[in-house]
Amino acid sequence: MREILVAGNWKMNASKKSSDELVDGIIAGVPKGSGFQLLVCPPFPYLASVAARVAGSAVRLGAQNVSEHDAGAYTGEVAPSMLRDVGCEFVIVGHSERRAMYGESSADVAAKFQSAQAAGLTPILCIGETLTEREQGSTEAVVDEQLGAVIDAAGIAAFSAAVIAYEPVWAIGTGMTATPEQAQEVHQHIREQLAAKDTVVAAGVQILYGGSMKGDNAAGLLAMPDIDGGLIGGASLKAGDFLAIAAAAARN
Image 1: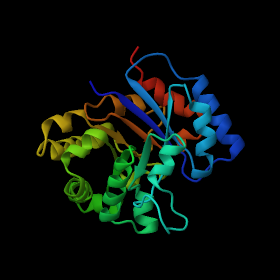
Image 2: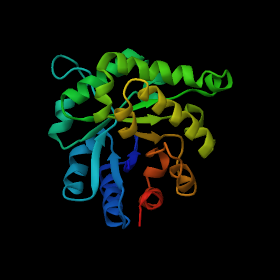
Image 3: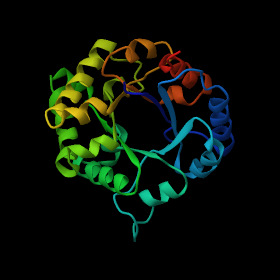
């Protein structure tokens, strides 16, 4: 049975003080039970501080972005080896905000995915459609293109050491949320696309829901057979809200 991964993407929020307080609150309140993992992804400046606080705890550390290059004259970029050096195990690649605001193409995302894995990081590959694309009936075509670009570049076996996050872009920060059934339909499609290449890899990969999961809807979403956790935005910025999702994930 796949473990549930509850991953907090803090985005460009927090301060040194608030990030320390947030992660301390999460560590102190980790629910009893099994079958789940907790992950926090702070902004770059706070990674080292948070790494020191989560060391030896049940909370794991990830970053929100990474360069496709491991070293060199790339001002402002952060190499995957640097993230490993400060204690990161995971890194988010291809988040919808990176694609939309910073022009990252599927090819760019595939390069970052491969760079992360080469440094020993587990990439969390984000894929998903906008509201316009959903209304046009293009959801499957969009996720197929975004997923396919990484499969073509890295190979299907790479997904045995990766996580996928389905982000319905129309449900991020809008107050709209996909129903468990809507989310499950796309998660199932993603797993079927992987299974067409390798059934073992498809059965093992965690597919997270990244569309405004909260404490009050987490149980319904996590009850779906192909939803293996959440990539949490706003609800990851308060320890109580994040832990409520974790509690829904715990098997007692």
